[in-house]
Image (cartoon, rainbow, N blue to C red; front, side, top):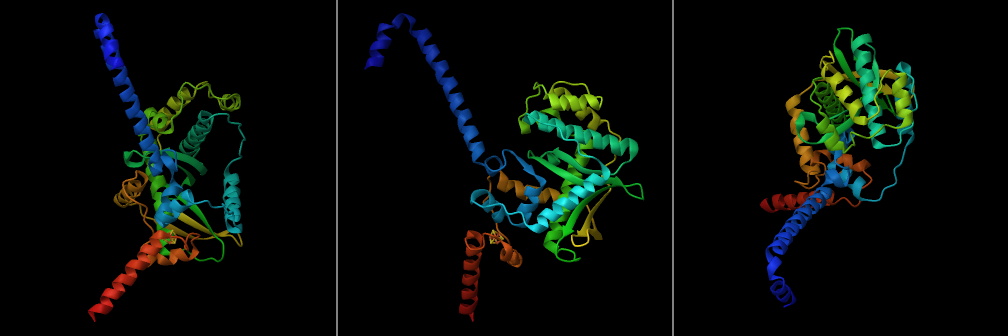
Length: 348
Ligand code: SF4
């Protein structure tokens, strides 16, 4: 063959050629494996739908119905903003404006956006630590329980209550009447505040590291921040140029903050009709329950198991679901029920 003839003709430099070929092969193989690994990673729901990090609301939506969440990612849907949602957002904004002004800062890169998050957390920690202020709409992020899934969220409110406890509060508005939501929705609200508490406690315990943040969010620590962000930082007495420098300063502040862990969790319900609060619900933090819940959730995100729809006793959720007519999970469950009934009839 041609290869054999070429090898015979080049017998003098054969070892060098061979060695080079072997090295190239190894490099190519390593590259191929790397590409395959990346391709595999991007096939997992965590990467395919969420680019490697989750919002706290992904977990609560998943807890409501995972199949529904999957359909919203995989089927063409038109996002509809209904009146209640618009009203709910404006109530949130009004509450936020009660405690601080919003300063618009132009961002030009992902590092700029993350710098704004860090600055807002640093400011919130200062406000809580030194002035015991009420903080609203504080960004939060981390890898709860260090399970390898990076999450982001926004805490509605943090403040010291009359007993001197650090309280975390989630604000929910009700559109139709002054009634509390049902058990399933309450459980979701509890899940949300427990997750925020876990992330906040880890942040002020110094559990966040630069490697975790840069790795999970894929940020460039050497990136020089945009001029609008730098201007804003200078006005607040922070003089860094690069994202990595700001990140280090923020992590030091988190680690050495004197803030306690969150002591109490509450949900406050407000009626959209008169914009007044009408009830509060206390939530008992349960670390084991939260961990188990995340464990089960992450199996889906990591592609270990298929999406699950609601259990039979929660089938009422399907009544208001946009996917009720095409839902495979529902069809499967209906089939199972029919077969079960058939068996019990046959047994009679
Ligand atoms: Fe979930 Fe029911 Fe909707 Fe199916 S029809 S996605 S099971 S809520």
